[in-house]
Length: 224
Image (tube, rainbow, N blue to C red; front, side, top):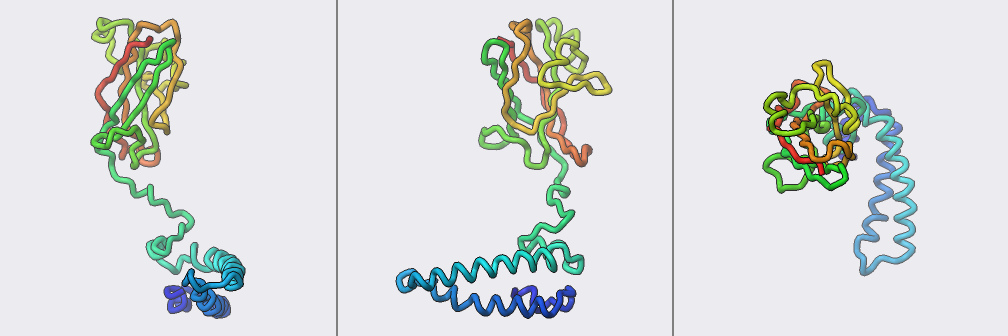
């Protein structure tokens, strides 16, 4: 109220609504003061405070939604500073360029089951999605041995991998998967047991792709 009342005319808030706001505020002060001292307050004072507060908050919600939160006469940064969330305001739209790559961990769990985890570099070791990204983009393929790896880089298509991880195939032919989770498990084909899964990944900004991170080094694990 200390901000709204002196700016009400500038912000074109109806005088009658401001007067009502002041009335509610003035009426609330003695009720709140009466219950601040927990040693002296009475049950009736607590009841009176709670009843008034419930009605006061209902008025405030309507007032703020109607005259403040989306009032274009109030600068957006000032509305955000009040703890509000103006329509169209998205703090994530100001995300910076991602400068690090995911730290990848693969753990074979047996029976073709693989555990994938990703963490932000230079963090405490806990797996999590980069705070400036929407998730992690994974590129992968399954090869039979190291000889295959030297003959067919991980960026080439592996047709057998198309069904893994709920994948899609990019225009350039690489098999990819996008995840909003830092840890997940996937059941790979039991027929690929003993083969090697190779993956590399990057943090992705879906809204502004040019702000996405670079690709990590290749990580691999034998499917068990």
